[in-house]
Length: 365
Picture 1 (cartoon, rainbow, N blue to C red):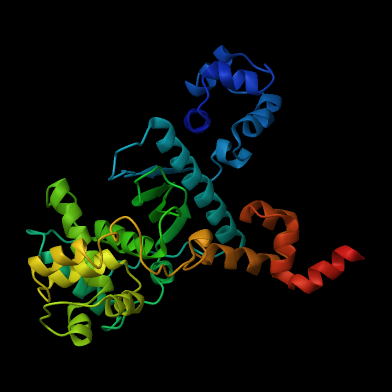
Picture 2: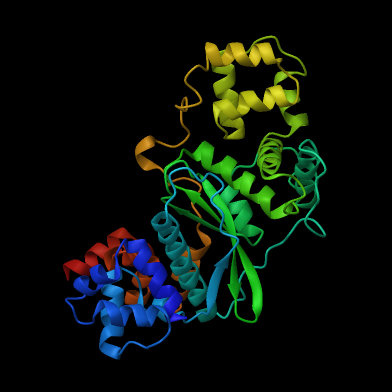
């Protein structure tokens, strides 16, 4: 498997075979690297130690110690995505999942099992059926009608692994499966940390829909529309929204819209679209809103929930981090191993274990 991992890591780095050879101080020739990638030869121990440093990946990633692979990776927004973009993202996801599985094995915990809310994925005959799909999921998960305070936490609780990382421009997220040797595949949702919290929550709900809809039961375009309908209905249930704004409105003021978007923790534009979707407002009212009060809302989020300079700080995926600190507190891993798994400085990890004051006092001694 080192052949595939090496090729992917090299593409992520944007290196040609000659570039990689040069980055390793010509320790090995470009021709030899080509043979490694074609599985015609195996690198020596010295070369094997030099490769991760040159490619900025871990040795365990190259060795594929967990024997995992990604499947179903599909950037639904294909504009501006290159082969290097894809390789970079796939490498990041593989490395993260490997670290996740490592800590689960150390704690002797089975990986959280995906709790699909339905007996099986559903075949949709129309875009509109996504509304009922959202209602059914809410009912099975016993969410009631109230707004969802933390989408990331909800999905992790249900067995989905959520990763927030930089993604190529205009790609807000995607879902994929991690194939494991002789084990059930793990579903993963990846979202971009370049977007607002409001956008990330919608993306998580959108990608959840793709996990629940039978592939090709709709055209690609209609499946995207259905996933959008699902996301709106899942985050803003019709009955709750109608209770807050009424069943028919001719106009809505700025302050009311801002209060509503904060209740549902969604974007202002998504809120307006949802109001039109359930026919609380007309096409004319929606058009007028986007020409007046909400004229900039498609490109600039009003009154963001999360400060622009702290993107990704709210509703973070926390299960992996909690497991690392669990293992560290119980003495199952060392401080340096926790630092490696969390990709954080040892001082930060120590502060996370002992508290900032205790860690600071320790370093002063």
